[in-house]
Amino acid sequence: MSADEAVRVMLDVSAVPDRPVGAGHYILQLARALDRRDDVDLVLCSRKDDRARWEVEAPGAEVRGAAPGPRPLRLAWERYRLAAVLEDMKAEVHHGPHYTMPASSPVPSVVTVHDLSFFDEPDWHERSKVVLFRRAIAHAATRAAVVVCPSATTAEALHRWCDVRAEVVVAPHGVDTDRFSPDEPFAGADAARLTRLDARFVPGRPLVVFVGTLEPRKDVPTLVRAFDDIANRHPDALLVLAGGRGWGGDAVERAVAATAVPDRIVRTGYVADDDIPALLRSAAAVAYPSLYEGFGLPALEALAVGAPLVTTSGTAMEEVAGSSALLVAPGDRASLSDALDLLLGGGDGPGVAERRVLGSEIAARHTWQSSAATHAEAYRMAVRSRRGA
Image 1: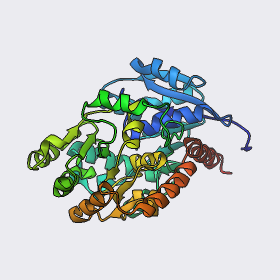
Image 2: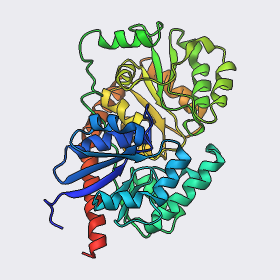
Image 3: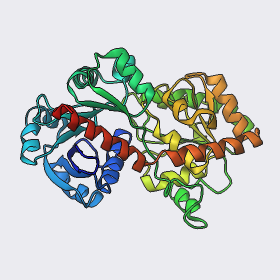
């Protein structure tokens, strides 16, 4: 097909919750970015009761509200009924952005595989999800025209665990540098947002900030213990856990209860998207000690606002952040506490400045527009695979 010919793509957005995080945030941002491209004729397939949201988020796209709401019904619908919708909408490519695809399809499928933790670390997930997503990933690896991975780390794991017959495209996530900027929208804007979140978030108070769902892979208990180790040296500092409680969240509660400073560990619950940049900009340190990620978007968002970042080596976060972050081994409590102590104490001044510049350069390269361009090429690859050209 010619490079300037628009590909009619159906993007399945039916799995995105009302409060998107992680993969849901990726799907939302991708839909917005694809909607602005001339080389993609975008159709969004939403849940029946969710069509209005997507008509606002992607006003140039055609929205078909066809999927049922409950997840078991939605997965069965996708597997056996979505093919008829694809044919009716005259789509040329189907994009399943969350591991799954129809059992059969009249058009080639592109599938996003976010990570291989269902194979690498099955104990981090509910058993039913492990069975479901292992099968889905293996099916996509052999039956999809193209598999999209957000990092080379994920692509390597896919080849390690699966018989990969699909083309594999690495399409890193992006960051909205208009929102995730080092500068607040106007003087006092960040302070106003933060005091609404918690009255203790006052200007000048040192914050160690974690953003993400509280689930086993994030290793938040180790972060809590590392903060406890150095809390007496920084008596004004707070540890902020900004995210909803996920499966396995009891371990975080136990870790907090066991510290000497439980009153200095703030669990905000889910934080609205518009509040996260203010929280990151106000951080003395952003800690993202996750043991395993497909990409690690909160780490990139921290770099975009110029916040000092501590994250884990040997992971997708190191692939993205490189030397712009302080890197510690996964699960290494002592190294994590040392890194937090350094940043809370104002040490390593020249190093912080150099990492901030490098982080800004990395963030500038990781845009959602760039990610959408790579996805658009994956769609063209899928069409060519069907045409045999």
